[in-house]
Length: 333
Image (cartoon, rainbow, N blue to C red; front, side, top):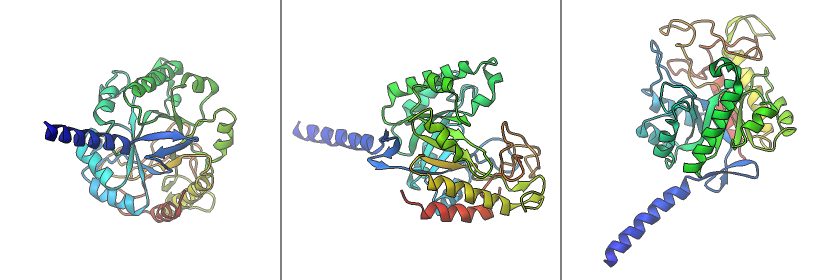
């Protein structure tokens, strides 16, 4: 009997330790992971192989190795990773994941069907999870909500509240397109921190003072960056594929955000690998693609959707990779 009690106490202690080790909170308007301030040095990650249109993780080992080299500590994904082996690999690499739940993903852990709750219950104790994120710049797409964004904000806030009931160890955020309105902020009262997808040429930090006037909640840049294709010649950069333009833009963007690190919780560059599936034939890299409110993309004002990677589809490093590697690895909180 004494031995049984001893083993039970060890088991409880192990579970308790795992629980404590995976605690993420907002403290003094900053992210705090397991008692230490955490600054997101991140990348958006949606790996779709050449010739395909759906995400898969066949290159995860190579990708994680490149991410570690670049000093990346956080991955942001646009739909949940329902594979504990992949999450384990990410955790082993010392990287955290922001898990995004979409509104309508045909029932795949989405908000419309309330299946996101199943994912939270399943993975809330996994050490790779940094926090939960609801939606991706849905404010640019009111047509998805019968033309009324209040329908989205109500769903978003309810989802945040529901997550908090079952997981007290991870904050809940949303990725908003640009700065939210006062009404959106009010309707999103259960959101702990706000992510913002910001494309303001090469200086997204102008949004920080705007934010301070309306909220004291923490913010992070959920999407920033530049593509490597110039639709027109501009600002001294020639037309066509132009890795120099991308590298210069990202250098200025990242440097300015890191210099403002007291006022933000981090940044995520869009994106890790080129997306050949987005604008045309998935077997080749096409010019084109379109994204709402993308006229602020440096340096041509056009988001060429298949050229955003910091590595190409074959994982060759672009010029911006070395810029990010230097800035991320040198930055300390």
